Image 1 (cartoon, helix red, strand yellow):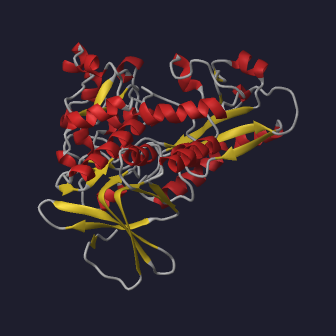
Image 2 (image 1 turned 90 degrees about the horizontal axis):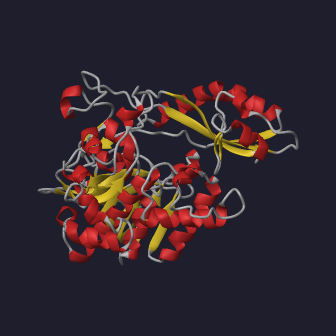
Image 3 (image 1 turned 45 degrees about the vertical axis):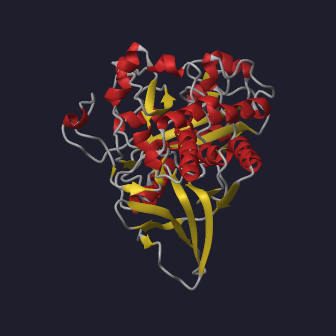
Length: 449
């Protein structure tokens, strides 16, 4: 991807400007856009897919893993619970219950919630079906990011320019194209002192999974999904393998399946992802045939679930050592609580366990570049650390913080790296994106170790 100068001229150029540009309308980009708009900024939300939503919509990652559920994410899942529960009625105490992660929602439910919130925000222009061709960067010390260029099949070049851009692509695509340092794969054992790391760094990332939904379409007796290679998840109850008798009794007729998983030779390459998806069809086909034989229809996710891709190397690299300590740095802008879940790595339950920890603002900041923030699972962190904060509550919290930070930078006409973190945190506290007990969390023995 060629980098364009902010001064280049083309006779077929269409330009659009906003205070904040968010690239990627997924689990992190939507909260980023909403937060920036609610903070008073005009926003362009740019998405390459025909509709917004990201992983819950096009990869069918509809299960609510991880926590804490705060801020805009809590608002979104509250809407899901109130109007889209698969049981037909809202779950009492949903946001406070321990079993909240056992619920999943249809992709269309996530899409409807996203569209309603974007429309209600009033300051967001949603632009879908546009693929970023190259970034706009003004050279200097440091360089300044000014937006992105999208080309269409008719040769027209469309420029989306902004005072601040948020890269919420999930693979730091925009930051990488702008020349920011990035990393792919596993770190070596000596780099950050992490457990479970190879002696030397390599390019191995977590495998990809093809998700699907099974739905009874022909009347018949309950089917024991434990006969499948990958039994599903019954929303609100649990996995078939752990709750077989109850699942048979309830016979809800609809389940979410982690179809099967395979390594991909390079998750940065769409062609490699397509190859893996085709190979996975042969793996899951026996289960699909069995389900069809028992009267079920199957809805395969349009896209393969990609857990890990390129990661920014920012002003701070968050490591699994930080997570295991429960570190809450001074510039924490989001909290996360989810174990190390690096598929393909062998670890005990204790090795994977982490306490509540903080995500530093520095992890969103590319080195040597102003005007750009990275949000979502592609922030600056190690392979192991990213296996924890890659889940939706965490990336949504990061996105919300990025959106507020971008709006503050625009309002104060200052670089994003100069945004006062204390002021940013006050706004996030007021918005419920950080818990009211944040100061107690910050002063806890685990956070100060």
